[in-house]
Image 1 (cartoon, rainbow, N blue to C red):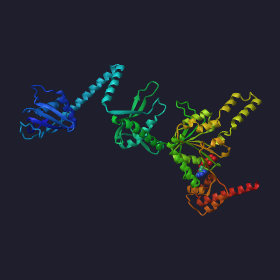
Image 2 (cartoon, rainbow, N blue to C red; image 1 turned 180 degrees about the vertical axis):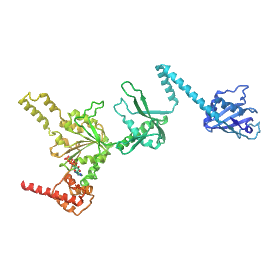
Image 3 (cartoon, protein in one colour; image 1 turned 120 degrees about the vertical axis):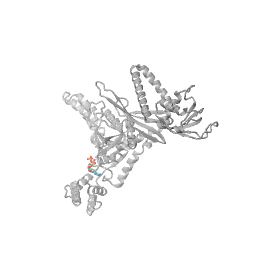
Image 4 (cartoon, rainbow, N blue to C red; image 1 turned 90 degrees about the vertical axis):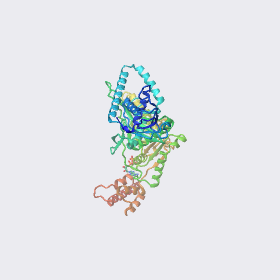
Length: 580
Ligand SMILES: Nc1ncnc2c1ncn2[C@@H]1O[C@H](COP(=O)(O)OP(=O)(O)OP(=O)(O)O)[C@@H](O)[C@H]1O
């Protein structure tokens, strides 16, 4: 330590020291730990005052003395701390009236030695604390420790002004990943890429880009309506036991000041959940589920659906359909997807039934893909013939998620929906009984009779109580023979919108010509239009003819192929009418 001797504050009066932040604790400790006593060389220092707002220490000196600077040495050494005290300055205006000394400035500089001492002290203090803590943990009985911890936490929480909320990845066993955790993860993935210093990168689900998220033990600050909150990502590692490997339990911790408790718990958390879910929905890889009959893995989580990534490229833009009809369907779908509040208000489950009917190859399946792509929904392709009974059908329904389309294709072929099935099976039972009871065991036939979904089971599936679980779902039936279906099945309210997909019109052809040949107009279009008015051809057939079959095939070749196909259909129709 060095003191500039010509600037010693050796006069009676009030002195002011500006102290750096790291010295504040040092001097505060000294002030408390060193009482003045008679004969103390520091006695002339009557008191020391600390003003935290101005970071200024006041030293009051009672008598003429040379001691103040010694006192400073003494105090700083006592505390073994660094004190870079700048501008020990005699305070203007507070000079004792008895003294008329000129103003003087004293500079005190401290050598790096003190810094080393400070670190050494801090190190040894921490080491001692850790040692004591380890002893405490090892020898203190668990009950006492728990008791102490409980009360120490209560005392701490009394003084500690921050509230913490943990959101764990798995709750209630490890069966299902917490939705809340996933939503927070998604929400923070956007925030953390901007602010976090340690990020982890994972390949996105579609393998096209890297997804960045907060690394473990990283902290990000978020601000909501002017209130600051802190998110920390952490994990608990439970030790491995003989049979089970080491388990990691990840969680997010949210910290905020207790003054904002209501706003954070009631508004902010809901906002995070909503945003997170939306981000997940945007980023998710959509799936095509199916209830394949043999899918019965003996896993702890047995799902009735198996899935693959849904990557159908169909959109309403590429669909060959009259523009007005197309627009009407798009608007209907979009209105449905935005009507959550409306459905809640009228007390109706948030779902809508579509019946797509028309001859084969008119684009029913294509339209389902276009619907899924428009609304960003998953698709559940339900194979009714693989469903054992109504109970299984209900289980399948419960396992479907929100924002999905449940499709039953060719519903007329899936089961007898005219109510005949039961009678038929019963009849066959009687016949078989008459023939030979031994030939076919009765039990098997009974099983056959009970192993199918009934019309009432299907009606329940569409609009029974269970169908309201989950919300935001489309149920789509397709059929080639609408007249075969039971009217109860397709009445409005069950199948809200009936869409007929029919033979290719000239308008629809123009969409296909644009898709396949990039042609808006062509001299051959007139011939095609004329033929299309006279005959019927499905969009699938038109599409097939417009498809180039070799690298040499140009637009003219494809269009003439189509004209030829149309003429052939026309001839066949004429021949058929003649025959009739
Ligand atoms: N309206 C259409 N717009 C665009 N392409 C279509 C259309 N209709 C049919 N296609 C084309 O024809 C093919 C068959 O269509 P799709 O499978 O959708 O018909 P479908 O009506 O479902 O037939 P099915 O009743 O036999 O299941 C599709 O791959 C598609 O390329």
